[in-house]
Image 1 (cartoon, rainbow, N blue to C red):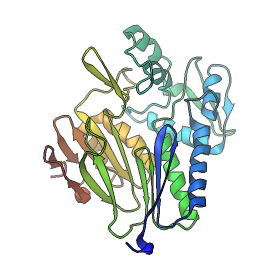
Image 2: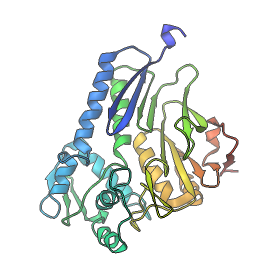
Image 3: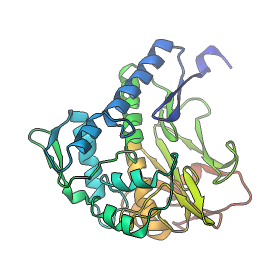
Length: 321
């Protein structure tokens, strides 16, 4: 491989996940600035530490509105809009449930039914009150908590892409712990692997070739625990307070913006394959790959011919046929 086609890789651990940056130029200073940018956004948005702009809002729940920076306000406004969609499985106010289940963290357990019922009263997205005039956020009830974990990585991935473009980078890839955003189309293309659920780290169902696209996968195998023979995963249904239970093992969204990938993986989990494919017919800019528990791989769009199935245990179907 010549120097002009060589890809340089840089890595770090941020947001509790491995972060990978690939560039066609060897520029450690640029990579450091990218990681610093990610850290700055993490510091604004995290709910895993006592202090951040989001935690300032949560600490003031039921007491007062909190003015936040324009980027944080815009992201919260976007998350609320996604929460308000009909029958949406996305909910920016799901924080109390996430905190109680602790799935993926030490101390996870199944909450008693009466506790779930109570926590649901604290997760009403309509009680997240936004004021565009001063960009403030007010949580109407004490005990409410915003959690942007379902959207933050996609937002940050898009900001990194924009930053790289401003720096004149024509070809690159950023992987924020599963949120992949690409720039340009290198020789041979960007080939993104689709992980095989509940398998070894490198096992893939197939690969997808993309250009200037985001690929976001969310799966029930990512964070889960088992209790009394039942699996409880991290994708919670805000309507019931329990993990979503349907035919899906994973959903992959292909879109221009990674934030749309974050939102639509959650929406698709709530809808399931049939309703999800129907909804996406109105959104030609967004495509989905569903992996079911019956080992079917369902493509929402005929344009996903770029997907190559590698595992013969799985059966490929096209919802558009």
